[in-house]
Image (cartoon, rainbow, N blue to C red; front, side, top):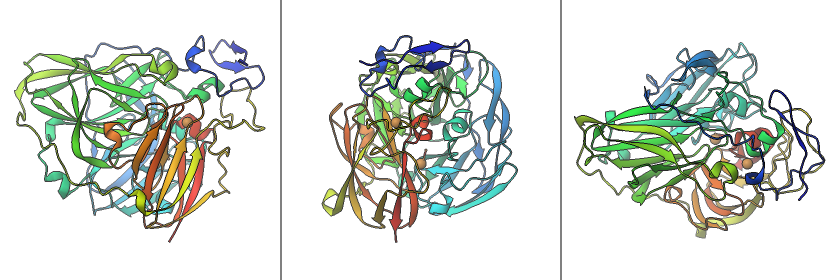
Length: 493
Ligand code: C2O
Ligand code: CU
Ligand code: CU
């Protein structure tokens, strides 16, 4: 195997000196030392889990700016959408409402907003070429046409998505509707919105400057923040609790499990509730994905505790070899909702394969490296590609027709993990072949992002929304995305 020579500068930045030896065939798990998947460091689990603040109403202003963030184990400079630290406020919406928000850019570089999972007009989707200059503002306004579910927003400006999201620019969008409210699911104090993100905070400073090696694997940190706080504790009422989780990391996957071994009910995913709950002990959640879980603490005694942890998984290289705790659950004296929640929901109506007019195939990574070569400094190398092609804002690769259904097949011949994301719609997954060779419980609903481990192929059935314009398809490993692993397709009316 052709291996690059790596030299570590004093700043710990890996410089690649060799020829292009970072071949897809290199097993990142065997890199030593592995700078890219640092060992997770757990904290004390004594800081109370904060609830992310909610933006009142259906409008207002989000100001992208520098903030001081209190991460529980210390504070640091970050980016946020208000004065209250990193992570923007949760947008609490109902299907049918119109969201009208002004983005105010007080950063020193362009930024914009992308509504991950929502179907919005193309010019409001946060395309990289529609960014707001420093000091300027942009008004966004569109109707919420989604089913109830947990979506999110983050910047998508050219080449800076990974950096800005990593430094703190992201927020949740919770959409409610009558259908979801007709089910008896834990709510109020028993419904927990959780944003999971790993950061590098060992030096006490949050900064973004991935080395070439870290662009290959994606940037991972040793500290796991939940709602912006390292190793927090959540006090739960005895009874059923609903955990609605976003993996908002740039590159790290979490294989979620409860430390007491209890099984969880998987009730929803990216685009809202499944048709029925599925029982599972683990959920592998990639960057950008969401999962909705019911956990039963009705038989727990007051004072009992357990942890939400991430267990080891195969096919994940170095990061998959680690097991660590994310969040402590401490059961309260107070009794919550102990009656069993509903476990079957509305039919999904996912697009059907039989209506497909065409199949397209996308190879995620694994193509030859072209003429790009390695950069001697840190930053983009342009080696992450889809169908051998790197991001080009002037090129639209595929044209589809609104209302038509197609099968899109995604292969991963590389040795890296690629969380695939398509803008502007929700779709259904038909099957996974290779690798894990099955769909997980949370992959059997409406999706906008899914994980492709090395060697896997996933087939998706997509019915294109009646929203003409140019949209994006990209890897949601944000280092891969900014390194060029992104294409455009056009929806024709
Ligand atoms: Cu969260 Cu282009 O996506
Ligand atoms: Cu998106
Ligand atoms: Cu990728």
